[in-house]
Image 1 (cartoon, rainbow, N blue to C red):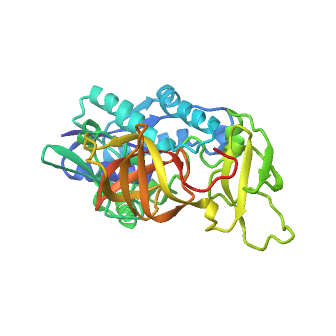
Image 2 (tube, one colour):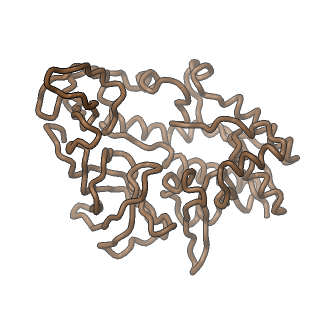
Image 3 (cartoon, one colour):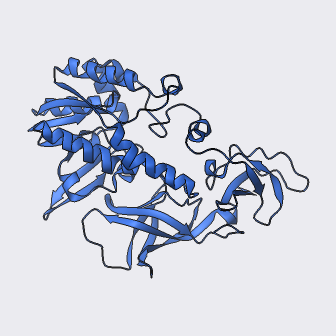
Length: 367
């Protein structure tokens, strides 16, 4: 079988290609450049040139063909534009979900097929199973690295074309195998955060595209606490960056963002990690995608995550009157953010998910 592996220049995709080669497949590698930014990228954490060289070295070690493609235009049109629109609207988007659906299992898949590939492979920690005429997305054996949360928007055609060689492996094993294989990247640091921002300051990066507008920082009851640096920089549950000093009669508990009003450019904060202002029992989600292709019969009980690496939570999914869905949790959920993904599970199977629209957390004067 001819397989094109998406090589990021990191250890995971390198070992994915190695495992496929050892399994007897005709393997080649493709490096995807998905971002072309401003001149500061070279010193601010965007490591495209370094990563490309690492990917080329991996192919040389394996003795496989190396391909490189520039998908920066597609990324800006299908991922980054949406990212900016969501921040303008006061929500907190998750670009990795769109990147997987539109770029890594869309544009990349098309490019691989143009090279004659039967399948594509990536270094994601996930598994795919096939039975009864459909493909199922399963959680990885390594629960700490499982990435099905970011893959929940894939469809049957995309899953059918995908291989995830690391699904049965744990990260320490992957690094050990990379070291034995002679990959120079065996101890390369894992990439974290949003791919196109890298190690740079998030506020500084975003301000290039969305000029910051400082505004009032208040309690939900309306008391002024100070000034924020721009509502778009804050999300529910955030503690850092509030710059709220000691206040008479306020106690010693730390302050957390509990909401914001994009229309008035106001951010709200309250004390306590478990503040009632942060707790939700219900949420509504739209743009819901079911991996099987069919919507399950509602109401439907399963488990869900509202952020990556959160333990799955018992819930019931109901149909909402305006075409969205309502998710009711057995236990209150902390800091659920509009714009993020709610992802559904049944045992080890990822069923799909949607984009969080709003929650029933208490509100002050924010919508």
